Length: 266
Length: 266
Image (tube, rainbow over all chains, first blue to last red):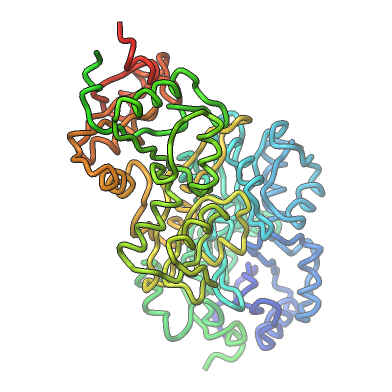
């Protein structure tokens, strides 16, 4: 039996671990369901900043994963929760998409014009415009406004090539104003992991963080003191593994080709 | 007589020197026309990256300045000329506005899809979109593509507050790809000043560069070895002058309240 099957909790990245974009990785989906059947506590953490949990549930159903909405820690939800816990119900201007707006509203926040907002929430937006960027710029220039970002990802892979992530907006604002977010909620930062651990009601040394990116998932896991498992079914592959370890100067505790190898280690 | 009236050539910034946005500074316009009548060689240099010279001429007519199109060195035109001189007629993808596209085409360049382009030209665009930014990102990631920016300005003042300049896109691309432009054409870089000097057929020590911004105009003038005159009719004012000099650690050769003081120095 793989030693990680002794762990009580599993914090699983989604893209590159149980699916790739819209498509499931069938043997990994089976492995997740087997973990759940075994009574392991499982949550899913994703830096996705454009989808609400409700939207994401549909993908999980399509994949065939037996998970519930409250096991999903997307940065849309994590950011909304972080703000409520630290600032109460707030007046927010966001650069983000309807999925982020939905989670912010569900947490009780008000979405208002930038002039009336106390908090700027930066999240990726495929409808980004000069007007939105101008409003975000003006809020950044005002040191009285709090500035929170969903996730730091600079570039995302997509089917036809790389596309900008939330990091593009963070970078643009930093270049113009010398200001970085007061808090970034997504991996490799700790906020998302702390919310996941809190939900699991487990200590960090009782869980393993599973992901396909060393600089995102493995670093996030190590920062909270969890065990880490790198799977080679996404961004990191058998081919680039050595290069990635050298580049990010960080080693996962365990490496498997994909999640199903938890159950059929040689 | 003011000693600068001995100079043969005048390289004049536009915004904050002879106008503010759409509105002329009447006594400065009179002074410019008087310089022209005296037989001084005069050109106008502007980091504006969204307007063609043809569009800009209308503003000059409205201001009452007796200038011709070939005396205008906007970064739209300067960039198109720079590329022609260094790369010949090129296949270009640009993030910019119709005014920039117009100048690029007038110089004989072809505007093509990013996949077919050899040169990325970054200029400001009030219609910027995720799609445009994605294409610029992909060109930046390809080291075989040349990357030219019209101007470095991060933020521009506008009537209702600060708005992003071309620098926003440069910053976003740098954050995502660690890549800066192979050349930036606008002030304080030298390309625009060299084209102006070349047109004037004068040596740098025969001209004075006039502007309202120490870090943009004065630095640009000093870099090519010209005399510099700071006017306090734009971004730099009598109130913030000392702070600006300290901030940018650079002193202009001369300071006047506005351009008309060339003719009525106390």
